[in-house]
Image 1: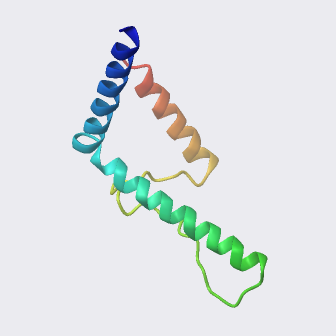
Image 2: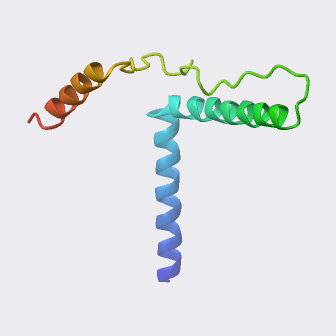
Length: 95
């Protein structure tokens, strides 16, 4: 009897997480497919470079996401990085 309850509870949690993913975090599935494409392009790039094949493959992992429109601006200098870290911790510890 307890085993059936555990199985039902596990199934309910799984269904709830899938529904949350579909209705609340739907962009995450698009990003998942995009990251799969990036991974495949990286494998193709290394395969072409490893065997010195005459094919031009550009890895897409270095590009910003086309799905997530508000990509963060990464700091280029230590001063910008320090300012970003300071701002992050100010927001993090702000009640």
